[in-house]
Image 1 (tube, rainbow, N blue to C red):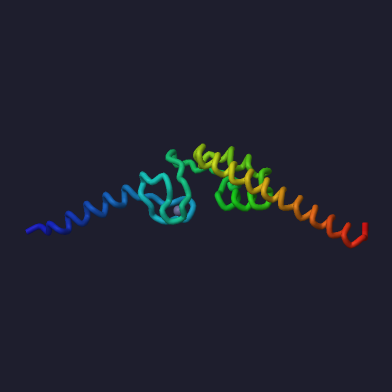
Image 2: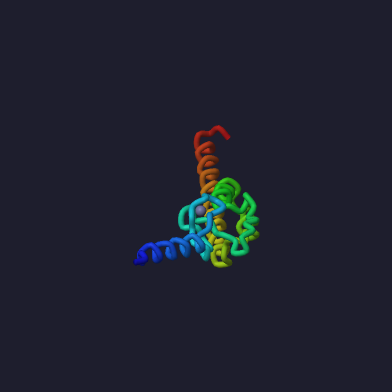
Length: 122
Ligand SMILES: [Zn+2]
């Protein structure tokens, strides 16, 4: 009597292996149809040729935005992995934060000059 369960088990695992692939970013086993890795969150190129450059990785973009502010916006806009709505949201946030920082700096500067004047130094 043939073991039915062995056949089912082999077919199941074979199909499972076929539909799995390795994530090029974290080397975890993920589904072949996945466009985004569920382990590291990286987006995968469907063609399999992940030619996403290092400067477009999310962590680099975030650090660049924090350090350079609006100067790092081209990194966001030329990033092939971001949708247009994400680019717009990031741009608006960066501009708002930049304007806020500008006014904060100007406010601090004015208070400082006022205090200096009040002290009679200048
Ligand atoms: Zn991954």
